[in-house]
Structure formats: structure tokens, C-alpha cells
Length: 338
Ligand code: KG4
Ligand code: ZN
Image (cartoon, rainbow, N blue to C red):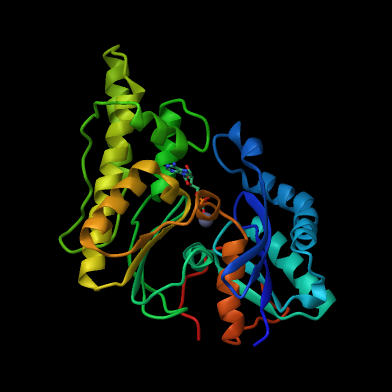
């Protein structure tokens, strides 16, 4: 069988990324232009600025990904792009670039769900084994997804309010930490021996859903009350307490789901999967449980295009091609393939 080379493009949020992946498993090139510096002073991603940056970067990023792959466009098998969900103006830049590239070189076009991409980042490291449980935890998502086969996604739990990363970023802001705050809270949490006791949000018995807004409010109230009393607060203890609550609930729910569905593999994905406290907890838990557990290396946890190419390869092989009518879909739901 011939090798399949897919060009992946990702522009759903604040990274402009392009990558070439071989057979859905091997990274040939992987280019990510981050905009974090431009959004930092606003304390979050500003959609208009994101779109403008994508427009400026996209051509260079695609060119670089192709050039470092050493492949000519006619050696590619398909172009895969993030179709949604994400910021509409940001998605459109990637979708239009993908359409133009596919049209110019007569290549099939595949639209990929961003979360399917995060999950398939794991396939760039080791083969997936089903049934598999995926914990997708990022700035926009906190989801538990059961997969019984390639492209078969069953959502068994999701956040009812804030995504975990969003809660991290908001708590970080009240502690006057720079954006994105997740890595800073993670670092501070590890520097403290003591942790403030914040609530655990387990929701109703048996639920795999998450909720982080109550925890976030507890932290904000704690800070507010301390300020009113004129007391100084040790941000390390706050960070440690907040992180302990997130880690305990996320690990607990993931373990319970893994047991209930008898999965052969547990994988984590998304920016918050980079969290050291969460990684350590999940690794120790699943080692004890004797279930193989994987997290992709850091650059594949956060947004990138290799993951889109990896997921897009499986869709391409299933014959799931899009037409030139494809549009960015900001509220796209994750549905199974075929
Ligand atoms: O997956 P990602 O790059 O973008 C989305 O699709 O959302 O995730 C970004 C999120 C941000 O909220 C950031 O604060 C969080 O991931 N993050 C972390 C860590 N590194 C990144 N959160 C906690 N601990 C970390 N070490
Ligand atoms: Zn993401």
C-alpha cells in the first residue's frame, strides 16, 4: 500500500499551525506560530486580533511545513483542516487556506473536529487500542469521550460551565499571574507545602460531568474576603488548593469511567493535560489500576496541526471528503465518522 501524506491546518484559536503527517502516525513536519504574546496584555484571546494574525501567518506557516517535509504538493494525499469548533473568524482563515490549497493542487479536502484532533495526537506516539477513554481537558473543553473504534466518539461527560483551562486562567488572573495562567498556577502549586481547602465538585452520584464555576467562585470569594479583612494571601497556597480540587475530581471521574467501561487504554489531551499535578495523579492512578495511560508530549497537548492531520488521515481513509462548500463551524458537535 502507498504511504498516505496529509497536510494538516489548524487555526481555531490562537495558534496558526500546519503539519505534514505520514500514515496518520508519523510527524514529517510540524510548524506552530503562537500568538500568545499578542493576547497577553489583554489577559485572554481577542478574536479580531487572532483572525488578523492567522491571515498574516497562514501562508508562511503552510510553506514552512511543506518545505521542511521535503515533499511537493503533488506527493500529498489530502488536506485536512479544523472545521470547528472555535472562533469563527479564526476558523475561516484555516478553512479558506485549506480550500485554496486543495483546489490549486487537486487534492481531497477533509474537515476535522478540533477535539477529534486532540484525541488523535496520541496516535502520533502509540497505536490506539479500543475501547479507549479520552480525557480532553483544555481552555475550551473538559470532556470524557469513550471510543469503541476509530472515529467512534461517545460523549459520556462534559463541563456544565467553565472548561478547566478557563477556570485556571480566571483564577490566575485574580492572583495577578500572566496569561495563560495554567502553567503559572501549576508552578506555584508545586512550591507550596500547604493548600487552602476548596470544595470538590462531584455533582450528582454517577455523573461524569464536570463543573468548575463553583470552585472558581470559592477562590474569588476567598481572595475578596481576605482583601476586605486587610489580610495578605499566599498565592502559592491558593494555587495549591485550587489545583488539588481540580486534580482530585478529574482523576476520580476518569478512573470511575475507565472502570465502568472496561477500557484498554486511557489517554489525555488538551492544554491542561500538560499540568504536572494532573499528569502525576493520572499516571499513578492508572499504574495502580493496571490500565495503560498515555499523554502526548507537551507540544502535542496544546493546539497543533499534526493532530489535525492525524485525525484527518483516518477520515480520508474512510472516504469522508468535503466539498469546496465547507465552512468554518464555530459550534460544531463531535459526531462519529461514517
Ligand atoms: O488545548 P489548548 O492549547 O487550547 C484550547 O484548545 O483551549 O489549551 C490551552 C489551555 C489554557 O487555558 C492554559 O492555561 C491551559 O491550557 N494550560 C494549563 C497548563 N498548560 C496550559 N493549565 C494547567 N496547567 C498547565 N501546566
Ligand atoms: Zn485545543
